[in-house]
Length: 444
Image (tube, rainbow, N blue to C red; front, side):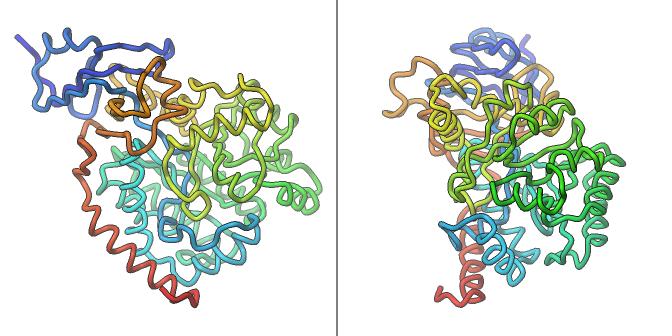
């Protein structure tokens, strides 16, 4: 007698991204509730199981959902408002003022929903977010059926949601308590950067992260000017400063890290810190090329992120993989660096490890959460197919994602979103965009 499962996915090549990089042709995955209960050859699974829902997807890649390890989801509302400028000019003269005039719970909720639409449609099942009014982002993710790790951005100066660092920390603890144990939402502590946060705020943020056993994440060494300014202000290396404050450990996550040198990499690796690479944002802001291949050689765990839509300007992690691989090869003049397999792992299992979630997501294994992305390979630009990793790194686009399952739930099937109303979300964000334009003195 066949056992009953909720969803049976069959017909494609299963890329498990497990320790052995197991690849199953004409394979499939059996799902009950929110977990993977079996995987193997299609013919064997069909003998063993009957399913409430059978997703048959021949000529496809069945793989773990992607993990966008750093973004600012609600900044979809600021996509394209300030392009082609240097980081500090962009941030201090355009982004911070625009946020001060416009960011509200409404903007964050609808902007985050739009981000969820974009991410689901390009294969992302988990995203790590830093922004303002992050309770709204968490609620948007839950509505979308997405997995997320959220953190309220902490500054020394007022934000639209917190008049002081104290209020920011209080709000973060509110999030930690509210979402504790939720099946989709996790919370981290996120001071913005060393140039916007005092030593006192960093130490208090670390204490809060330790109290709840959650990641502490921040932007770090994003470009040459930042590195030089921090050295002048701190009278020491930024990484040494973090070490002296007691922040470096296996739950410390650093975004960008463009200007880290061998000493910084060694120090971060020694403390088992984590890094998130954001190549397209770094390129657009001309911040430089992070030494990712050196980090990987030293054993640092490096995830992959898109950053926000104001500095990328999209949330397509498949495109980010292509950029990450090619940029490293070009910058180091070595075509063997950042091979296809590596960048696929950065977007899946390594991203899961960054946030201590590798036991639950990032690969397809019995007992793990059923977060699955199905790529339709019956496309001209994906023909012929010799190597799935090569296609994922260099050929596949977000629009090739056919079906997405998160936490055992179908959230998109045959390119149709099942949890969100795309048209309403775009309508709402267009209206928000008109208000932003007016606030900046631009004719909508």
